[in-house]
Image (spheres, helix red, strand yellow):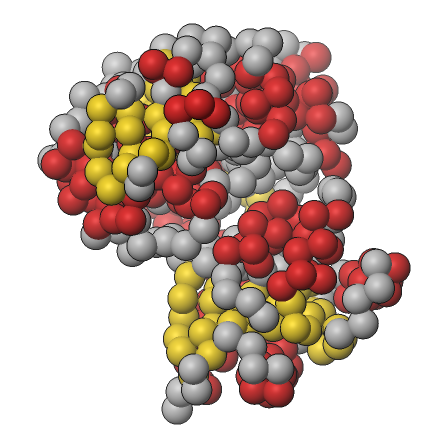
Length: 449
């Protein structure tokens, strides 16, 4: 019996282990941590015949035939480099799922920002058309969970990070979507060129390509490459690059795809031009998949938005509290702040990332009545705000303090919005951005009581 080792006991790792077990592998699943919840999962998995090692730092041995890596595990850690040098096949969880699911057509969505909203919109449209088209990858199901289902989906709508693409080179979607491209994850990918090439690989593997033509980097690259792709623009057909007749755009308030009016842009309830761009990419994917206009219009008019992405939590004394916890880098946070009514009280901070903060700081100066700083980034952000001559910030350290103080300051400044848009990862104070956003939601709802 061949032997497989799965690294990382998250949703993806567990699904990968179960899929391998079903397909006749002898499976070991390991994790460096050993919390109480992992101990409970260990008991359940071992009852299924899957060996589990907790508190274990993986080291390759010649008895292993296949290594499967969960999305959060860096692809270039020494143990994986050594395994590849030993000739042990090493793949990501998404690659394993692809091997079972490649008979299904896939839509794969990648990009620095905008992936989750676009993926959610595409899945909603496909489902409104009566298709079994679950979202998977970074949101929804682990891809291997879909491979374990009794009946395969009609379509797979997969959000793929650069980490997942890097470890899943065979994934070849029917439709590939690239939402945005700005510097992110450079601590892992080292250079912007490496980061670009990883994402470009997925699009080159795709039968149809859809690009955000309003993204500065993609627009510049697209004038030299990808001429036969579907390009999109919220600024009308004249702004399209490549072959405009293949594109999607907004003109006179209508979403138009390949010359055909599809629906009114006002049907989408989410704020911001970036969400109109996400809408264009979702509509293009749906039409390339053969979905009718009625199903698209129905899905968009009913679409509630994405949790933790400009999510309206409540209105307290005429002040809107908005959760944008998913804005984990400067570009996403700049878009978030630019999308809400000003003046706003901004809550920012967490575990800082490398990147260009210029546009974010300019938007703070233009839109924010005050900034409340939380988490590990407080001193660094305070220094940057001082350097650009923005004095209206306070270091409040915690989310509890930030929400309470945000309510006070909003009244003082007649601000319309208190916005959590951190421009940071969450790992200094929370397990993930969802937990951070849920804590913000809980604190906001307490104001109403």
